[in-house]
Length: 294
Image 1 (tube, rainbow, N blue to C red):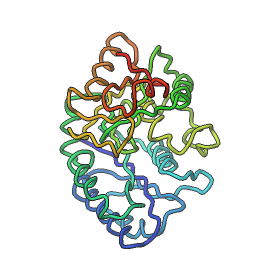
Image 2 (cartoon, rainbow, N blue to C red):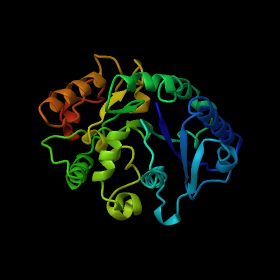
Image 3 (cartoon, rainbow, N blue to C red):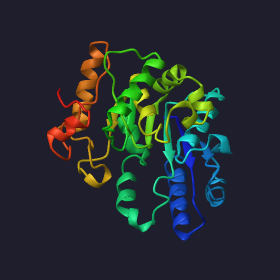
Image 4 (cartoon, rainbow, N blue to C red):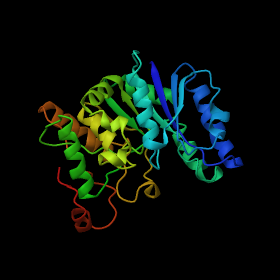
């Protein structure tokens, strides 16, 4: 499969931990994506160690720092830049990987369990391609989570309507900024998304720094991408205290996919309705503004 890697990069300093993190990401890019094109978008607040450690990779075709005017305190402005690069390029890809230097602000050794896990899933090309091969339209993520604020859901409904996705139901598929999407779904979403969401500071257009964690991946599902979470069988509450999914049929991923396909067959979209792995009482869940009825 032809993969485009859109790498949103940031490094806070030139410490030993930072160098270990950057070397880890370098190894992934060299071993898993050696034949893939890479767009490297760098935060304007990043230390120069990022360019020193990653900038000479042979498969980087575009590398640029985000302008200070577009900066928000997350990876969102880097993803904006990568998408602008993509729109300028006349090239066809099978899937696009939204990748960022996750974990780099934490001590390297403390994240060993996470690295061991994702090295077998979202950072394993063979694992991702095996999932993608059986699906024509997809959003592949390590795991998803539900943003349990009614205001977030209402805000996204407004965005989806603005983009022309006027359906009776919708899905909010937060994917924690590490995900793959098929090229057709991405093209569909970008064609519908007003350009100001890529060309302007996200805060100035009514969005926030979590735009690419929740709203944008959710928009991809509205554009036809089926959510596929490949995080494995173990539910880890420390990753998300509210809701998490994995690939087991008895867990949320299967419920999400079943609902997605049912709504797709009826020419609609679907609402995220997580059932297992909700902390607190059912009453508390309802108070949070999330529907739990299938």
